[in-house]
Amino acid sequence: MPDVLLSHGYFLAEDPKEQQIMRPYPPLGLLYLSAYLKRAGFGVEIFDSTLRTRAEQSATLASRGAPVLGLYTNLITRRSVLDVAAVARSHGWTVVLGGPESANYPREYLSRGAHVVVLGEGEVTMAALLEALPTRGPHRLHEVPGLAFLDEAGEMVVTAPRPQVEDLDSLPWPDRAAIDLPAYVDIWRTHHGRGSVNLITARGCAYRCNWCSHAVYGHTHRRRRPEACADEVAHIREAYAPDQLWYADDVFTIDHRWLKAYAEEITRRGLALPFETISRADRMLKEDVFEALAALGCSRIWIGAESGSQRILNAMQRGVTREQVQWAAHAARRHGIEVGMFLMWGYEGETPDDIAETVDLVKRAHPHVFFTTLAYPIAGTGYYRKVADRVSLPVPWEDATDRDHVIAGRRDRAYYAHADRWLRRDVEAHHLREADPGRASMLAAEADEARRALLAAHHADAARP
Image (cartoon, rainbow, N blue to C red; front, side, top):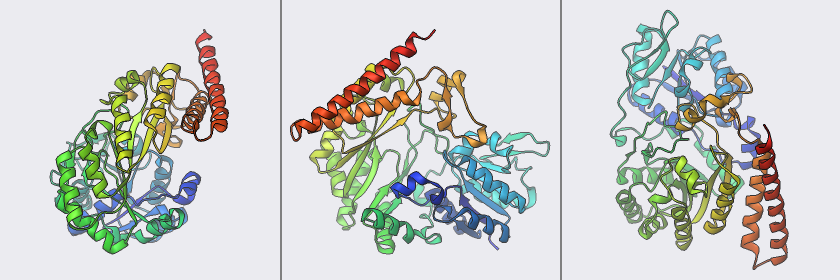
């Protein structure tokens, strides 16, 4: 009988949007946790819900006799995790939650069925918790750092914070053998012609963009040795033969010395594979950064541009300029690397002029692909604190996510649909003006129509008492 069953609340079969995209990756955090706990001598099983069904998970909880269920939580799985926890509790499991979502809302999760919430990194804390639970139970864990729980009087207790793991290379590699990883590779290959595997070379981000959550790693950045990362890539290639990698670091190019050393190690060992990753424009302002990325096999770099308005970027505390974003995007193209760009509408104080500047930046930067999202305040962030007195939820907390927060005084979604149409039509028209002038003219007219609709909505809102 295992000591712990690890699982999560995401089911691909219940996500129509992802079923169209079909780019799933396994939960690396749970795989790291499994490997660490096994090395510490605990019996561990993983139920990876991504490619399974809720009925299968419920049947597992009903039939297995493990004393502890560890569930990973994130922004999109709140309702699902609560449902899984309820099933588990009905069969006598002790429910332990970890991840950024439960760290932001420990009281809410504890009051709705969780026994314990792990705060911060999970490996060392979970091992200590599994040692303590058989003798202390879930209500007398005061001496175990890194936890939130309800004491015997029903009061929430938050124990002392646990120090983070300083040497990431002291952790074992993710326990990929415990799940059906080849199924993920096959899904990618079937739908995109190339199988993909995810890994990390670092944990955390030291930057302080005020809409970004740092609930698990805080404002830290810890990096693995280049040689250790190359060893893991060699293992992944041998075991799973992917066609590409996804480096899931928050800021892949943050340390230029490390990047150069890693590129040299990968090149020396003939391990280069195409890959995608995310970084910041201000950490890619040298040609040798792109030379290293190209040597590693980088096929696409994702840049968090967020806005083309410097005023909005400054309000976000991004620490990046629009000129840096433009330079990095053009430099990537020079080195044969595609550019992906993330953009955010609706940040506090944004005006039509700021939206126009975003449209202008995307035309100038010319990314191969870009995505937009509507800014939403995540609990515990500076952005949330800035708008907290105007935030409400239109549905009960347990049925919502932080994306459902309504900010009084902000434009409705139809307004930002106009912004999206303006952006996409104007950018396409700009890049077709020589190759296809007729279509470019049509798209420019559609962009102008969307721009005028947005301005009309803006002036109508401004005229309301």
